[in-house]
Length: 289
Length: 260
Image 1 (cartoon, rainbow over the protein chains, first blue to last red):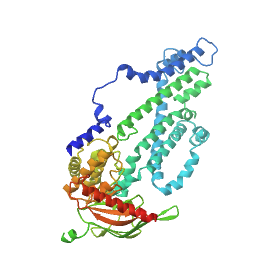
Image 2: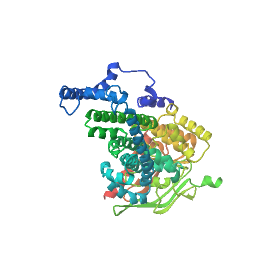
Image 3: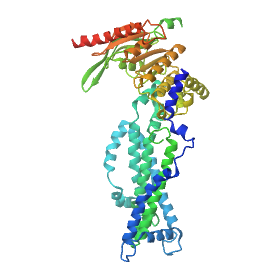
């Protein structure tokens, strides 16, 4: 029996990447490891080059050349170049937007998660709410802007509401999906092992739907970043969306592009952090490991 | 105790099961009678649609019979319970739990003290030889190892009667043979009672004390065959092949009769 088990073990060792091979310091060559980031940089470099060639040295270009934008971004962050209303204000705007994105996202998660669990598990709740939600879902966040400003007034409360709305549906839909697509075999397995139906919610439904819920949270946070500009069209004085709208009115296109770039980078970093968290928490799931 | 020893661990009295499927009534199982003694290894064999899985699911408590009674230790079976452990063909392990977590799931769910759960888990990990994979997740294991975890999971939960629904059907031939040997080894050492569904005649003759032959349309128990061969059994022995041929004929004649 032991000998046969050893044979069984050796053929499965290769299927254990996380447990076994990480400790072994077998690294591919530097060139091979640098290949992926290098490839990822080629396209943006080409875009920058094209942008530069198309705009640099043309005084009447409506789009500023990349170097001007880089200078404006430096001034926005540290000042010392233009010394105007925008100089050294990046941190203020970034932190205002961050608080709205994460605040709106947190409110959305706090409502969408329990609601999704209820809709997914309890048929009457689903029949009561699901049709309404399906009708409300296609309405874009932009369309809610006027109503939101009437209901919540000009300012941050409206911004929170719109960001929250953007993050809400992905979290809700994925939570419902996760809860409803638990393999029925797992309920049978749990009940034959003596886990009664009340306890199955915590012991089976929640862990089994965690990957889908996590995907919903990730998408929701992404959408929160997507709608931040709309959210800050509500007349708030600070925020990345606010300076984009304000700079547009003042024809400061380089500031508009700076705002776009900062949103892109901040959204990217925030998504990477969430993914890292997912890798840690969902090591058991083949989709995340 | 004396009375218990005489009682069958499992008894089916005229058990029938009908399903509604798209407005049509399906006789999945018709008037099944079966007695299983403690410690017996019984195989259910038959073509698809003969009701062997339905019978197993009724014993597990996942289905209730339309007519008749399913009794364990003379008590009617009402729903799933840890004394009847099920081993599924597709394993049905909890993917978010490690090998340890899966084996400890039952004892923990039933409120056993943590120290006891830990001891039990280690004992049964050793029984199925998975010590080196105790912290691995199911998706990191081969099919054979997953099925070892599934078997250890029901044994660790004090199952007296182990129900196995084509447990080795998805495994390659070599792994299947190894697991058949290991299962017999565990069965002989622990005094379990096993009700094992298979569609492989060879597997049934190799494993069982007694083979229950079932046939479809409606699903029913056709006959029973005692396997008199001593263990360990050799699949190349003439007696083994004779029994295998006889069973093949029985299964075949049912088809012939049905066609006629």
